[in-house]
Amino acid sequence: MRILVTGGAGFIGSHLCDRLLAEGHEVIAMDNLVTGSTDNIAHLASHRRFRFIFHDVTEYIHLDGPLDVILHLASLPSPVDYLEKPIKTLKVGALGTHKTLGLAVVKRALYLLASTSEVYGDPKVHPQPETYWGNVNPIGPRGVYDESKRYAEAMTMAYHRAHGLETRTARIFNTYGPRMRLDDGRVVPNFVKQALLGEPLTVYDDGSRTRSFCYVSDMVEGLYRLLLSDEVYPVNLGSPHEMTVLEFAHKMLEVSGSSSEIVFVTPADERTKDDPQTRRPDISKARRVLGWQPRVVLEEGLRLTIEWFQEHLAKPQKKPEQG
Ligand code: NAD
Ligand code: UDP
Image (cartoon, rainbow, N blue to C red; front, side, top):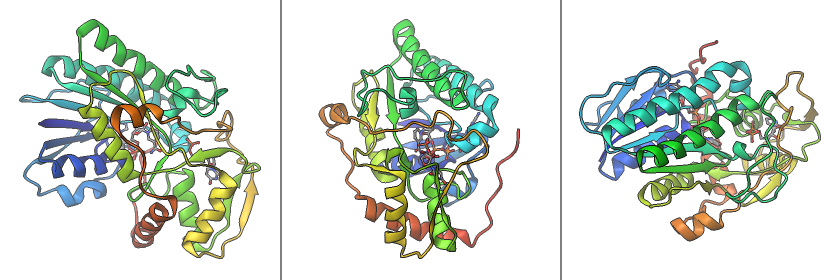
């Protein structure tokens, strides 16, 4: 198949490109590098079935030739990034989804939207099944991300209903692994970097909020299975192994062997406003429909991630653009 991956120079997108190429497909990665980096796809530069196009997907997309699949991953998913770039975040979720859906109609391509657990907001139902409608503050600082993805889901379903477009929607929960941007501000890069540098691990507020962390190879497997399935309605993909952020900090120290201390800090900006208190996917549907569940245990995934960060902390990274 000839496949377009938007956000293909990002963390999950670049791993997905690797997998699609390994399956024998032709892959076009499209990215404006707002948070991604060509470092993530440098190893693919000379691959004969791979091509990179620098393009902002909120602008009209022209692509020559046939296209069988579009996977729309372009987004600004780190809370620190979307607080800094709220309008770009809304635009890529809304206009970027609209443009890529339009392209899918023209090309008669199968369309997969990378949505998020953030559509559930600060959930009142726990764990979260796909049938839960969520609890989102539209005007809070996180609203720019949450609402852009909720709009993206609504737009995707509208194209399915109005144009008969074949669509898939993955609700991705916290995912980690090599190629996360070292300074993207999410908890995994922060804690790994702090542990490796012997700096204090910054647990926000009292560390009682919960998350569950899925290793990137499991996520890519889930996305690929969803793509090949015939499930039109959203499917949760993530780890059901829930822990508090404080427990996660202790796990990071244990796996890295770091002697960093843990400090409790209250960020001065709005990054923890409306920060979901609990989050855990109900993955019964993914188990039933895709025969999928995560395989990589946290200790192993963290070990692989720490190794990668160790190699890359030494190298200077491209700073994302402002605006
Ligand atoms: P990432 O920031 O590494 O990748 C996103 C990519 O999209 C970046 O390369 C960025 O440059 C690109 N991009 C952003 N705006 C663009 C635009 N207008 N035009 C073209 N490219 C643009 O993030 P990620 O963690 O790999 O996330 C990938 C997808 O998965 C996103 O859609 C995200 O919302 C979703 N997701 C991720 C997680 C997670 O824990 N990693 C959780 C839930 C959902
Ligand atoms: N967090 C933290 N310390 C950090 C970064 C994040 O305690 O240095 C917390 C954050 O407040 C949230 C959780 O870790 O409760 C996960 O945050 P992340 O930014 O990774 O993504 P989120 O799940 O909120 O989208």
